[in-house]
Every structure is written in C-alpha cells, then in structure tokens.
Length: 156
Image (cartoon, one colour):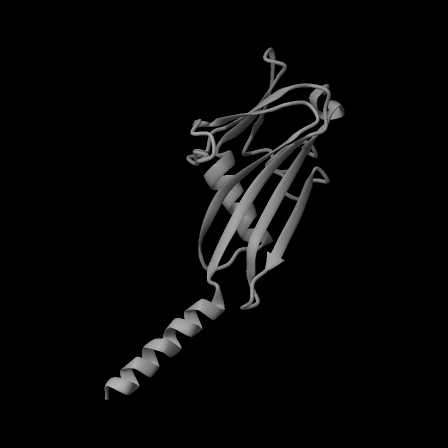
C-alpha cells in the first residue's frame, strides 16, 4: 500500500514537472526616436525591479535609441497573442498611456482609440511586434509585445 502511494506521488510530481505550467509576459517600448521618453501607464500594474531596488510607479524612462522591457504578467497556465494583448490592455496600459517627450511635451493615447496606427491600444498596428516561445505541453510559455516609437509618431 505504501509502495502504491509512493509510486502515485512520484508519477504526479513527474507529470507536473513535465508540463511546465508557468508562463511569463513582457511589454517592451522600443524608442527608435531621437528623443528621451518617459512611458506613463494608468493600469494597475506596477514595476518593482529587484536588481536595483528602484520602483517605477506607473512611469518608466526610455532614453533615445534604447529599449525598455517590463516583465508584467505571469502565472500558471500558458499565454498567447490574445492573452498578452488583454493583459497589456487591462493590466498595464489601463485607460490612458502617455509619452512625455524630452521632459516637456506629452503625447497621450486613450483606450477608446483602438484603430489609430500610432495608438498603443491598436494591437494590430504595424508599430507592434509579437514574439513567443512554445512550452513543452504545446502552449506558449513566454510572450512579448514590442511597441516601436519613432520620430514620425512623436511629431504628429
């Protein structure tokens, strides 16, 4: 009887380890402009990086010509394009997103603008790229959305 329990416990542990049920999602701002930006989001997600202890409470600086990656979601299960878009929209972006340009001008987008080519809420915009890595169980274990900002967008 003890042997059966031991074998069942070992089999369950192997099954759970083999499925790798965890996933992670990242959102990246790719600042290809000649301007320094501050990315300001209104969603409930807050970034607390462990490497330097600095908290970014709804804002994140992105220097000209650099990328800023925010790991913003993860849990048990799997991800995919539809899920990361929903996570980004409701958990990160919220009702509005702003780009503060060189500390002076502000370009703001609202959640109702899902059709504008430059809008971060239009996940079908050519400004977005989507990347993913499959997990061993067939779903995606990692997904990333990258939003590209350039001078043409900022000078509208």
